[in-house]
Image (cartoon, rainbow, N blue to C red; front, side):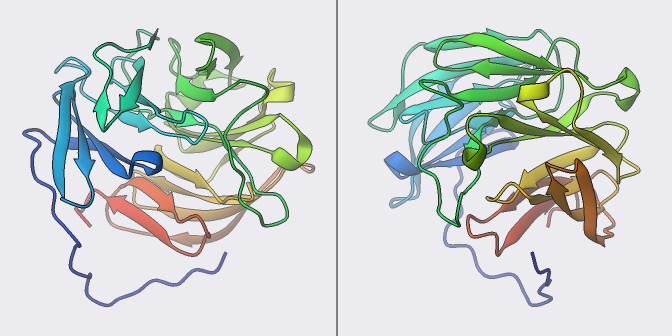
Length: 290
């Protein structure tokens, strides 16, 4: 993964979408409906028409005290989406004709307040070919979220509404789980790789076939790891922390190795990081509003 930063001026936006009355905490593209989903601190979720650049649906999906912390979309979910409140509640909604069902079709409650956004499992690519779904097995759609004990990670099957696994660090000194990413290793069958960033700056990785203990644990950051993303092969990724450090790394499943490749030091925290599908462009969201 080559790294190059542009120092040129930022391009003009294609559109500026204005309708929220509170801070926007989560956005996600829903490809099947060609819409954009956005959620704010008051718990309101909006569905945007990307041609007309205006909201076509709005609903209060979480309480104002919880807000919308995260939004989950996946090809395996099809026309269903997930919304997550800061109170640990995750709701699954039916999206039809650019509007949500009146009631959630599934509600998961962990009863824990935290800042860790959920993660929906996605296949790693085999032979450089993109994968078509995000299933952990026949009929499964897997989601990871911080649990009642916020150092632990709960794995849920959205299709059945059942908790299927609990991942725990070796000790609780790592603090709260702050960021998550899941990848299904398609070339190896159904097992899922879960990578998590923690409050003390540690990054942990699990293979769900051997969930009793993390496959690896490394501390590459001095501050909480707020953002994590893996490439589409599942063999490397990027982590960002509250002190502004961005770390590019590689992963070896067979040798349980985490190898830092390049580090960038910033002046402000990295709240989120995204990687384009071809792994060629990285976007970061910083506390400096850039």
